[in-house]
Image (cartoon, rainbow, N blue to C red):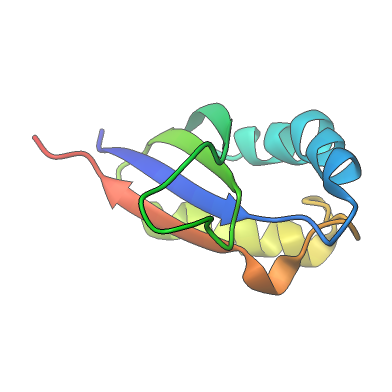
Length: 105
């Protein structure tokens, strides 16, 4: 079984950080963790950098174990479309990014 990390960077709409983080921690992360192959989620807040503040202050790292990443992407899309994966109005959605990285052997 291949091991991946799903990296998500995001931000809240101005003035809505508390609402966004409450939704992410209590609703969104559990929804994502219910997907096949998802093992854990750790969240981080921006601390410091070499060249100013990032545009996306929140980072989530999901550990994933699955043979093929495509089915998880398809299921994520299906659940988002059906409403099984919720969206918060506090999320600045267009600014969010998501990547998968495969662990090197």
